[in-house]
Image (cartoon, rainbow, N blue to C red; front, side, top):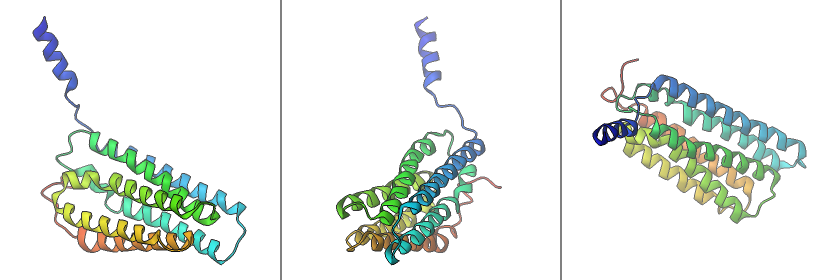
Length: 207
């Protein structure tokens, strides 16, 4: 009886194979919903703004930033469906917890930059935390399962986070938001130039 119990316990502990296409589709839909909530939060903020040049700059930059988040996240998202060595869903599910928190925090970064209702230290913590969570959630699966992406993704992320940190020392939150967005523009360019051009056929199945 003890032997049967131990065998059944081991079977329960073994992760079940994941249907990658189904899981990736559902996580992608959840991410779209979270981005949509960010846009709703941003548009709701615009009703309570005393408009001046800086608040207009912050609002326009916020919309650009949300577009860049979408671009950075989805430009290689389809690759997840074909990663050969991803046999269970834990890496993607757990990393996307950080991604979801990053989306929420960055939406609040944009909102507070428009309203200008935080001190710079609080805003700095929000911005750096939100960007870090976003990149941890976005890139964990690629770094774990696709070795050709590791070095360049790490470099791109460190540069982008460095630009974010440097931007938080600018005198106004609106300037900081512009700096963060410039960092994302760099990441988008570097992603197309140095990452998506790599041969990863050894690690993914054919479409």
